[in-house]
Amino acid sequence: QAQLIESGGRLVQAGGSLRLTCVASGRAFSSDDWGWFRQAPGKEREFVATINWTGQRTTYADSVKGRFTISRDNTSNRVYLQMNDLQPEDTAVYYCNLAAKPQFPWGRGTQVTVAS
Image (cartoon, rainbow, N blue to C red; front, side, top):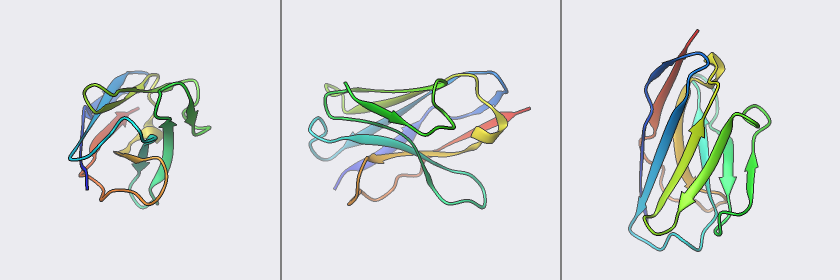
């Protein structure tokens, strides 16, 4: 099992930017596709972005396309999410995990709050 630790979330004004980091420890990392997900208050957890094991193929939810960029560093077991032009509807707890099921136990996530 891997331990997932997300960081980088905070309160930001609308139009601002944040970079989230996920560190995955405890197992091999570089051969898996990874993703970012988010859960807003009162809503189900949803897909945000995925990246394949080479880092050359990415997918995005329509709501973040053109504003968010996922990347990875296989040498340090890290996945990143660069978020630009943040909007209040991006407010959520953000999580990383394998892109497809079965997934690892979820980490604590990192809170992103966007003020209008």
